[in-house]
Amino acid sequence: MSPADRLLGRRHVLRLGVSGLGLAALGAAGCGSAPVRTARSTVGQVDFRHALHIPPLAEPTRVQGDDGARLTFDLAAQEGRAHIVDQGETRTWGINGDHLGPTLRARRGDTVIVRFTNGLSETTTLHWHGMHLPAEADGGPHQMVEPGESWEPSWRIAQPAATLWYHPHPHGETEAHVHRGIAGLFLLDDDEEEALDLPREYGVDDIPVIVQDRTFDAQGQLVETSHRNNGMLGETVLVNGTADPVLEVSAERTRLRILNGSGARSYAFGFEDGRTFAMIASDGGLLPAPVRMERIMLTPGERAEILVDMEPAEEVVLRSFPQDLGLTRGMADSTGSGDELDIMLLRAAQTLRPASALPSILARLEALEETAASTVRGFELRTNRINGRSMDRGRIDEVVTAGTTEIWEVWNDHGQPHNVHIHDVQFQILSVGAEPPPPELAGWKDTVYLPPHERVRLIMRFSDYTSTEIPYMYHCHLLWHEDQGMMGQFVVVAPGEEDDVDVAPRLGDDGSGPREPGPHGH
Ligand code: C2O
Ligand code: CU
Figure 1 (cartoon, helix red, strand yellow):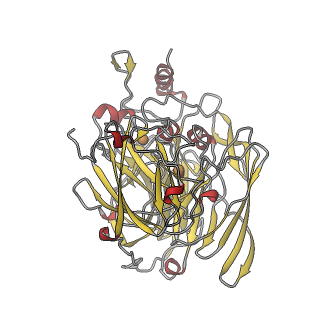
Figure 2 (cartoon, protein in one colour):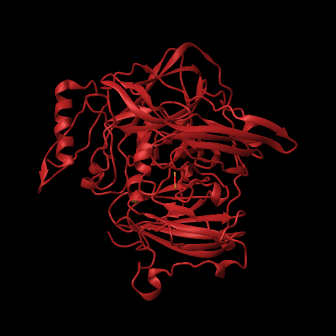
Figure 3 (spheres, helix red, strand yellow):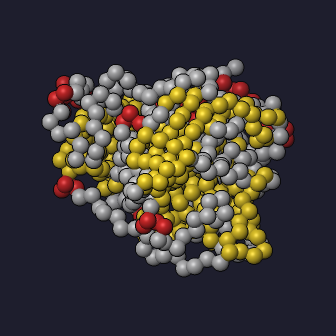
């Protein structure tokens, strides 16, 4: 029996009522020999009954200096057990705890020192997703930490307030390590954000919402399910590691910092009653102004901060609606984008902290000008390769000069869903296909969805931190694709050092490589 058959078999058992999670619209229709996954719905079928876990704020040692503090965080990866589902205690991984990790928090100008110890039985890394920092502090596949060993990266926070996150990044094992439970938020603060009248009491009206889909077996253990085309899809959606989560809301207006921490699944978050919310921040920080929305789509690795208003004593479900990823029906079903999933119940108290008026302006966003760009690079994503090549830790694919602005044209040249994440920088989106970015994509981003056959143009500035040796990564953030090699490496070098790097020639240089940037026909 193939893993896929086993999965479907299990689903049928679940459907007969072994699990409390209702599974609707499940089909096992055969298509050739491969079973086909069809869209599923958990609408109205999740028994919300567990108080949402709020990851604790990490408590660094703090030494105040004249221009910011020095914060030292002690983080230890460990194996543990967590009570998540009724079937039994789940063996999990976590940081300073059994499952997931604490929320780190620092201000612009602070110097961060992390003392990370790997208490796991496998080599891993810890990567600071969205952070501008020196390549040796990045925690990618070049900063492997052996079991029992420690690693001590340090950098100064030099970017706006934002909801960033951290997760392991060992090449080939990232999906598994995140799946077992290592991930957490890294919140950045600054004066500009703090001057705004926004909910900001952590765990009270400012809530971390880490969304991850997992499958559990009859003993409550995590199941590494079939990868199919795009990576593991889970049947149960956890928020901050909590199944069937309930958020007790105590304010008229609540800020949700939503992270899609799943490996392969995308979500289109909204509320069951269609109420709108105000989106205030994307991956890299505040949007210029709040954007009224009914749905926000987040692909793996993306974040959004939203403000939702509630009346006293009311309840509303945060739901993920089917997403339009631009895929064929079969591909959409196999990547879960047709699924409709109840995520979390928000339950408002009888009396709520009053909300003040929503600020109409949030941040001044300096638009990066196309005319300032000195280099345009093209990246074609297809069949787990970028520009025809599979990730090789020994190969530098691109050399970037510090102090320059570049345009990266990225296109997904086949029918599978991909996104692209670039380390070290936050970028702005110039266009998606022929269109300018919609408002939710018009702020700072570090990860963006790539609809099949559409060219997405990104602009970014590479500032400081140079090395001719240690690269940063760019890759698809569907973790299975990344693990399969859909990743490349770039170095940022000082002006004049470009020739010191032994860079791999582009395959296209001899006519054998990728075609010119799309869009191509469908
Ligand atoms: Cu969130 Cu290279 O990773
Ligand atoms: Cu991908």
